[in-house]
Every structure is written in structure tokens, then in C-alpha cells.
Image (cartoon, rainbow, N blue to C red; front, side):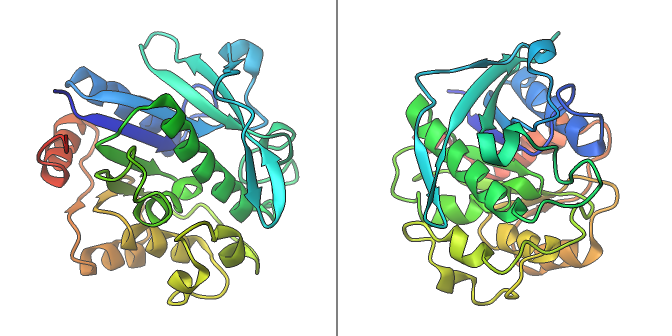
Length: 271
């Protein structure tokens, strides 16, 4: 039976401008599907995505849930589209406040949004709740980008008893630095959900920045990938020192390297 891989991407081309991460967000799921994996793909519905051009439409049966973050209700909207020329379907996590009227990491003036931490938390919980609704059980979750950095923590704590994720392995991809600022003083409080308690974050700096997010993702992952050419050297060293399996930068022809790494992390289907 084919292994199931859930790709949680910060960026996917052609919905956002091409970058090292957005190209990998498009190509990796496609190549893994071609070598025999069953895949699902998620990304944020950034405000700069042209819904008409991308042919996005809302999935009513998956939308409508409210996620409480920092004691405030935030409605979850799910949209879907298919990447042209591929058979890859993409699910988009949307919300009026966090995504619809916003750009990506930075606003029109180039300033990072002060609630980027909350946006990442909403995105993470939105993905996991939607996967539960799909009744789809991933063997592996591949996280790409700082927006997915709290996924490993949630899978291993808040969602560890959920049938959808009880046996799931988590792999985190490391890219170059993507945040200039920290995520503010309320990030640890906002992360709290079920067993994902704030005290689990006591080992990290009070203010979460790109480095602390990376450490958090590594600490709760089963494997790490050096996905980019200019990965933060300190973060890569942290990953190697953690004792977890690390896939070194596989270059342009990466399909076999990822397939072998997934087979190493998850040697059977977990069924």
C-alpha cells in the first residue's frame, strides 16, 4: 500500500512568486506522487493570490469551524485548486483577518506583520483539523517554511492521540532565514492548545524568532532535510547535534533522495 505524505507548504508556485521554497513546494509533491506516494498538499491562502486566475473555490463541507487563538474566535475557510499541468490538488487555509486582506510575510511597505506568529498557529491548527475532516491518515508530514514550524509540536502533543496522527512521522525542511523580526511577546501563550502547554516552550527564548522556531520544529520532528542552498549554519548544526536523521542538501535531482529518506523515517506504512 502506498505511503501517504502530507505536504504543509508556506509557498507553492504558481500561486505565489517563484522562490527556492515555492518551486520546491510545487515540485516535491509532484515528484513524490510520480514515484508512488499518495499525497495531499496545503498552503496559506495569502492575500496576494489571485483566486480567479488560480481557479480557487471554497470547500463548504470543510469550512466553518472556529479556531480559538488568544481567546478570540477565528473562522476557518478552506479553498481548493489544482496546479495547472499537474495532478496536484492544493488545499488553501484562509481567514478574513489573517490572510484575505494581507500579503505574505510582509506588508506592502515591506514590514513584517506583528501577528505572524498567530498566523502560523492558525495555519497549523487549520491544516490539522482539515486533515481530520478528510479522514485521511498521513504516514509522513513534510513541513516547509516557518509558517509550518509549530506543526511538529502539535502533532507530537495536542494531536498525538488523534487517529489521523497517532503514528505519523514528521519531517522538517530547513531553508534560509525568512524572518527579520521576532514573533512578539504573546507567541508562547497563543501556541497553547490541549497538551501543547506553554511550559514545553520554557527552554526557548521568551521571544520566538526564526532561529527559535527552527529549534522548536527540529525538537519535535523525526527527520530534518537541508532543503535549501543557504540554510542557517547554526540551525543545521542544531539539527545534526539533535541525533535525528538529517538529509543533506540533495541538489536538483532530489526525488530518489527524498524517497529513500522517507523510507528510512517510516520503514512501513504504520497500518
